[in-house]
Amino acid sequence: MTPPPEIARDTWAPWAARWRATLLLILTITLLRLLYLAFLCPYTLVEDEAHYWEWSRRLALSYYTKGPGVAWTIAATTRLFGDTEFAVRLASPIASGIGALAVALLARETCRDRRAPFFAAALWFLVPIFQVMGLLLTIDGPYCACWALAMLFAARAFRTGAITPWAGLGLALGVGALYKYTILLALPGLLFALWWSRRHTTRKGEKPPPMLRGSSLAALLFLLCMLPIIVWNQREGWPTIAHLLGHLHVKGGDTPITQGQGSKYQGWHYEPKWTLDFLAAQLGMIGPALALGLLESLRAPRSRTPDFEPAGAILLIAGAVPILLFYLLLSFVASPEANWPMAGYITLLPLAAARIPRDMDHWLARLRAWHALPTPRPRQGFLLRRPESLSQVLWHATLVCGLITGLGMLRLDLLARLPGLNKAIPLHRFMWADVMAQDVQRLATDLQHETGQSPLIFAQAYGRASQFAFYLPGHPTTYCPGPRIAGRPTQYDYFPDTNLDLHPELVGRPAIMVGATLADWQKVFDRVDEIGQLKGEGKPNRPAFRGYNFRGFPPRTPQPAP
Image (cartoon, rainbow, N blue to C red; front, side, top):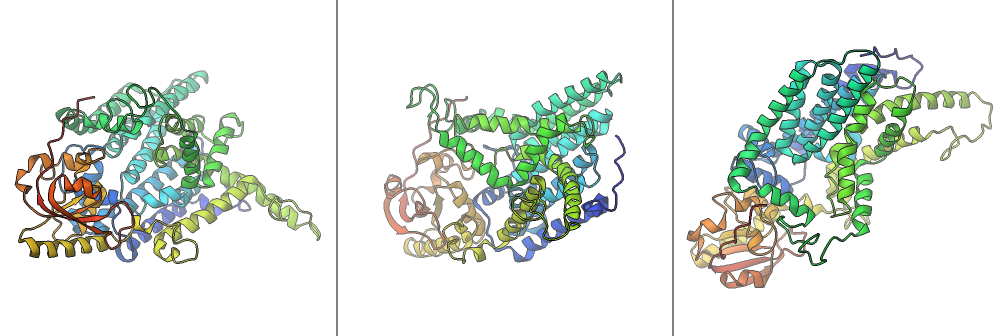
């Protein structure tokens, strides 16, 4: 690795070249987030968080939609700190801190400017979607941390051939797959970067570092991590494949077929809105930092200036292209979720971090020269009178936007009080799950007094059923009819204690039901009364009902293996 050049004192942000500045930034943000979650966070568990907590109460080798990583993580933190919101979310700022450290080390490994690691970590904390995953515990936070670690270990393994980084690469990919299968999309880019690195070394007349032992160990560790997922799916008939195909709405999936053979369109169809919405969402998720990373990814391979290690820029670009291209192409078949390609932006952060100090040095020199001119000074900027550059404007925009979103998301309930923001901020997604549970408890208590039986709790949405399980006293078993009424199967259909096909003893009991329609519930109860919206419920299509004498659902038709 080429020693980085010394940082002159008159350059921009020379203090950022000190590694301790990067460590201090990461530790400070992580500690502040932990304190916020422990004492100041006003948000109840969102639906996915509550559902993953339900998984953690029923540990398994894998689950219907995801691997076991998030369940095992929440199980560990709740065993230590109890079933609290803080305990469920404890891993999120820790994973974010690990991701920031990995990105900083990746910049240190691939970029020549010693200031790049600090700005790579800073960008991690300024990008809106990465800010969210540093506070809420879903699969994305640990998964992105694993992606960043995989790229870091790959950079070291490809450069040195040492066994340790190869082992780290295999473990990072394997553990990442336990959280989210999308980490498999890192493999094409890694293979290309490895090929390019070895080809570049050979062209220089040097011998590439050994890789057979290291790559074999990485593959073995990766496969060992994948074993729980493989074993569970083999036992259950590979339902995860059906779930993934369901996102495409094709034959063999767990959703109605709208594409290809058997669809109502009698073939494939495309709506431009899918792609346009996807692209707009990416800009909103990443912010101005996206432009910095993309600009440098276009410049770096063609540049003759030594801003990166020989194979560094190629690895950073190759780490982003496959997953971003995959989901862009997917938007021509279906409507992707905005967060699906988020890991692809991780390796763009070191690229942007290398661009920022280099271009800010040029901007600072221009600014000093402009200040030395006699007044009135000429206009040299496109927004302001003073000199400006594209990178400087984008960096300042990233900083401002990141501070606004990062601080604003801490108290969305206060922002929602501002004129015009009340309807724009979906507070019901982050708050009032406890209020809804209290209302359900009140209704259930009244129904028990009326019937003399303990009511069942049904929710058509798995997330709402999970929130009720978390916030109701005693964390009772709740049920999600899911596909028995309308919708996709859920993990509730695989837990033995919540699979409604396995519990005939529930017949005859009263229930409080949330979601679906009056007609849906009348099919399985002798009598159903519609109550209306629960207190705190923000979704109009989720009314509450009171049911008498549950008759049971017809057994589900087994899904054929894909």
